[in-house]
Image (tube, rainbow, N blue to C red; front, side):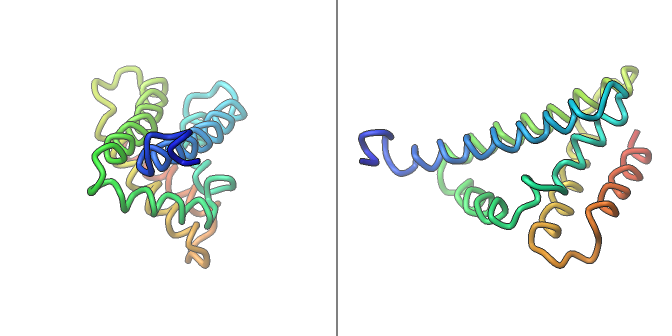
Length: 148
């Protein structure tokens, strides 16, 4: 059955990773759409969506960890990982530039914010984090103000 629908196990895993990435992307897009037209609010919504379901979810965390563990050993999964994270950072970059159109290069601030989001999301998804989702959002706002 697996070979009928996919080119092999790696292809099936890649499709699952892509589907999971699309699910996260939809949640991010919904958060931004609900934030209104203010550029800062839209950027904060994009960043803070990771602290709420469906993204902050122990089952999603387990799925991501399985995919991440494959990135150094499977070139296809590694390339897909780079693509998915590139799209996430690209979303941050676009929202940064909407807020700060005078900024020449939003790449490094997007990298820094991605690292912050990943760390906070990981702690929240593991459960019993020493902070609340609201406190994580506050930290993101402070980092954002310091970076920009």
